[in-house]
Length: 427
Image (cartoon, rainbow, N blue to C red):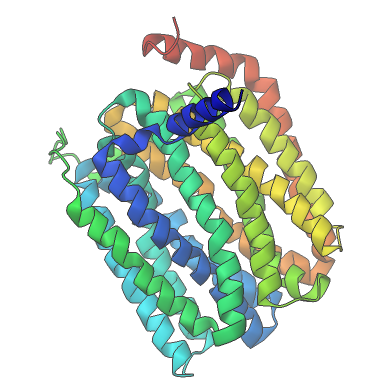
């Protein structure tokens, strides 16, 4: 009996991590797993630093806004770039520039010369850098996988990396901030870029046939990618739902330091604990997606998880007990990654290869590009109507979007099945 259980457990682990048998992706996983922990540490440290310096929900929203607004503007151009030039080189440049930003921030804080305007400027710079990261990184996953049957697993495993780091990064940030201050978090984040930079240098990537007409203007390629996405009913529907859910999730993330300090009467450790619990839930969801054998049924998961997230968002606004809030946040993280991860997998499965970078830039715009507006509005709304009402409005918006998705679901399912049949995924 025990032997059978051990064997089944080993098979499950092998299925979850099967994409790591590809050397390039294995290097990427090792480097990214360290770098992402540092990234989450910096995100928590920036939020806490701004709120400590200003005690202003509005400026907290502004800090998130200036970091994320470049993505909203630049994602489409980044997608064109990811389809036109070497994605490997884009990622290498992005990691180096992000490390430089962390070093500057660390020096300013550790030497006690930091001011809020400097944090905002450096946040804007990082936002510009990150705008070129997500489309290239998401599209680059397909280049690291030699066997296309492992692509879905690689996408889900990449999501589990991001959310696994959300488990450790915020918790570690809370401890480091309490003991040494925000500057050490920024310094550790700068060091965390070294493994992924080394991993990218060690990769052996075969030349990609770019098949790009050099005479074609960027504007024309932007229009081509947008028309392609909007002409596809499944892509259009998924991006619209993701935009609304991510908009509201961004608002919640912005308000977290206020919940930690004002509602739960804690410090940076409390903030780290809450965000980490969200990471635990998201990690569980990502590993579930990685363990799935195929993409069948992901549409239903998207519909259920987006509605579940909306309900939890409303509930969270009225919870004042830290431990109950942690439980709610756990399920919110689970629901959010199920929606995000399933959308990513479906998009990467059905998209044409020559449009992959541009479609993933639209995915990035839906996932991250709208959050700056949500962050800014959340700061304003929380100042005027309070936290519960702000999150209540957000949750209601998610539920309305979910209702429209389910109304369109029969048509959505028909289009998806046609593409899956064409690609040989289903018979």
